[in-house]
Length: 295
Image (tube, rainbow, N blue to C red; front, side):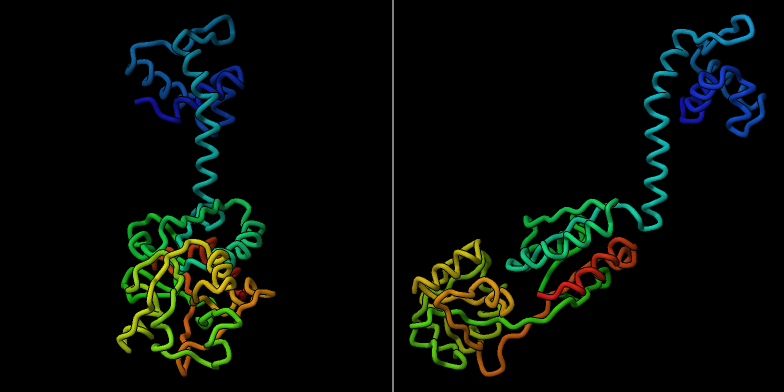
């Protein structure tokens, strides 16, 4: 079988000019080098080189193998360095999945300092895993999950990063605008703009409307939180968004925010990882950076 050892020998003999010099450079005995090449020649019934005076001349097979060695040995040496870095947590790839639709803006603030701190780590954000993140994490399709809904799992661990409150956003001239809080019955006649997900995954339904057996007049699914706010500002309906996002993106708009129920709807953003990988240095480093970036 042809392996890296054979290619490394052929490459070193070509560079050093002799088997003796190559053996010294590779910290091998001359007989070990000669024996390895002899076995290769016997197995494939070819000659790698012939003696020419005091030197060696590559055969057609030897020329082919040298060309292969010049291409592959450096790649294999690089691969070994990469694997060593990965084992020390210095290099790798992090695929982040999103279950928090509005959290992309916050995540973009995390990525810049993280990439600066970990220049040898590739970073990928997969929004295709929105609302299906736990399954993707368990299936090793992503490495980190940004979610407001951590679960109990023997295979996963979730790290809280920051707390927030969901608030109802209405036009400043809306009849509810002067209220301190909103009750479930207040939304029966409203168009409610939500992210594109079923009501069973929305806290405004599961924790507020459904227990009171109330539903809005109409639920309108919208991808963009910016568009949601534009529609609210135009008096077309109401929406529920995190307080930190409303403070930033609704500034200057004719929008008022209200507490949802007497106690409010409070949530936390979590970073989920597989337990066996949580302490990998560059994954643990992402959590460290995230904890310093509050919305």
